[in-house]
Amino acid sequence: MLCRIQRPKGKSSFKKGSAMKRKSKLAIARATAVLAVFEAAAVYGQGKYSLKSPGGVAFSDFRGYEDWAVVSSARTDEVLKVIVANPIMIKAFKEGFPGNGKPFPDGSKIAKLQWKPKKSTEAPFVVDVPDIFKQAFVMEKDSKRFLKDDGGWGYAVFNYEAASDKFTADSSPVNCGTKCHMAVKAKDYIFHPYQKR
Image 1: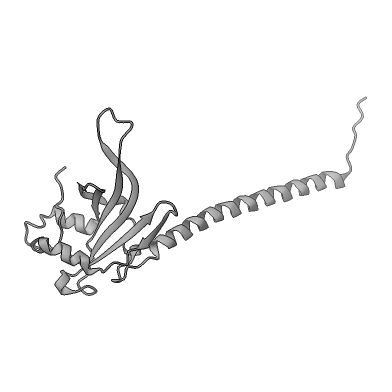
Image 2: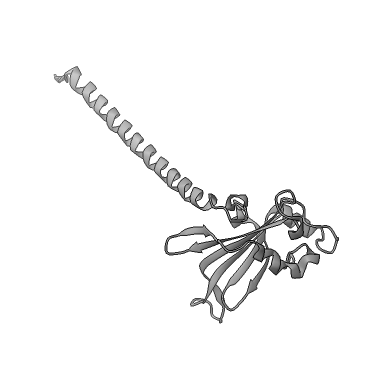
């Protein structure tokens, strides 16, 4: 005949309670870790998007510029440039600007993203590729906020420092943008056309 040994009821309920406490603590630790990651991301985003130029152009107005469509690209001896624009401006380009004679509508935004170049060590041919990000030169059209003499465009430069992984608003005079862009006043102050692709 087999004998059945009974465990005291107190011990098994203690084990269950202890396991539940451990699971609760683990869940709290996981939730805390996830919140810390989101908080760090929010603080980073706030740092970048809390910047404002001396002329009143806010970097936050360009939120999402990393995913905007490419308008064109350019190269100087110092930098590689990729020019991107928001959907409002891309739509105007696709509707025939500047040949259609219409100016860009308010809400148009364009950003010239600039990198220090380096020679590719992987390509089987000689080619320059982006190295260290340098700055974002931005323009936004808002005829209520910006001067009519400037075509209703606001200009700003946000510099990037790789060592600190931080952006800063350039303190140089904002009218530099207008002075440079006067040469293309007939094209609503925009140098780069939307390139065929």
